[in-house]
Length: 323
Image (cartoon, rainbow, N blue to C red; front, top):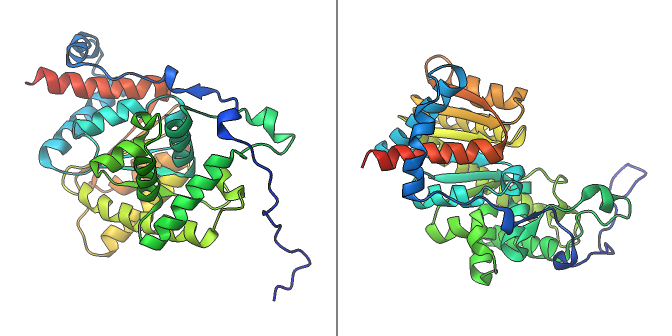
């Protein structure tokens, strides 16, 4: 029996609305489009014109590391926050996945939610300021019900959040599944791990949420992620795209577990892409894991909607040009 004077609030009477009735700021009509081989070749001159100085030199080093990792069969792990989905970049990452440049994807709860809404409705990203005053923020019924139901099913089946939501999307065949990273990764058996902080995501404020299931499935994903991080050894690449706190902390713990268990984890590359450089990515992704000669880390600053397509274009044009 608790000694506190307060009881946890009851969510059973939460009022929801349909996702299909909600105004959203991001739609698939505005998403990025991957380059064709001919278009990739046409960008070669632009990329070759960049100086071999500072960020441009780092950019080239990251591109080379990704291409070499694929050639060596080492892990190429893309960690991303929800903003990567909201800036329309899923088609770019799906195209790289299709071409073998994605070993695994890692995200937070926000990434799962925005990806799910894109798959189901073709839009995401509500206007928080206008909805918060009435208590409507985060109350899309389909998002809360279907994501939570998938998580509970996944926990019962012994799989993680990334896999169980991907499975649910493939099984239900949503109208915009081709724009969903989780949907397309599940079809290709590419692992997706989702790392959740309970209370931070809108699905946690729905009556269907089950804290035990969320914790079980997310912890499964942490252990799966750690297993994949082990395959960075000997030439792999870990990229952190826009997660300022959760994924840098997850990555650092995975690195120490791998080494604690006696596995080698050296000679790999890390990179942080964000429009602001934060302490945790700079420390826990770029510096600490590759310290003392274990590898190389890079930081590149710029908007995701510019930098990630540019990175993909550089990978593509080099590969096409080498044929």
